[in-house]
Image (cartoon, rainbow, N blue to C red; front, side):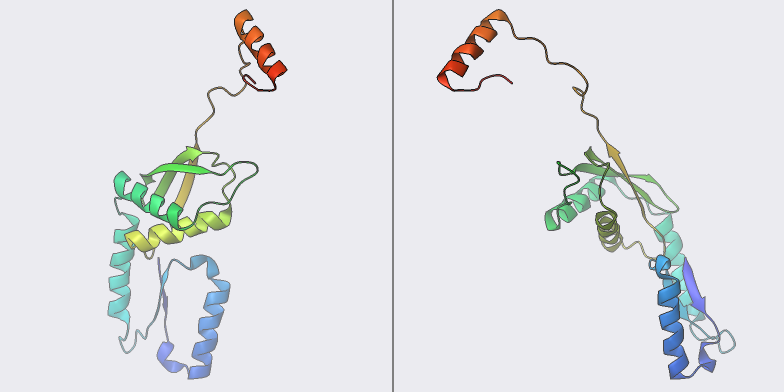
Length: 177
């Protein structure tokens, strides 16, 4: 996505600053888009817009390899670890590309259900900087692995294990459970 503001040559300095502030305030959700100020009548800035359109298309259709994405993810984790969500810290293991136009990065790990929105934005910015994805939004999806033992009951101790645990309790040590 490329934003072009036309009739730029007809504005004085005060109104130019005001337009820039209004665009930043009202279109803050388009922070990924490149912004150009042009004058179509004079032809100034039009060539930069067309170059930005080509870059935005290339970024939207980019193919990102799994090893490079995983290395970028590990680098981001080393720089800033994800905050705890509840009792557990999210563990991010690897990342791969799940789609394009706009690019989708799928991150696999455990306890990823409650990753904060601010940490997701941090990862988006990091991936955009590393892979030079300018002019296209980046989506991140989390796939959390499930505990295979969740919901299953522990098997009962055998008779010899029960005697051993009883002796350990008497001596003040904890062996099982």
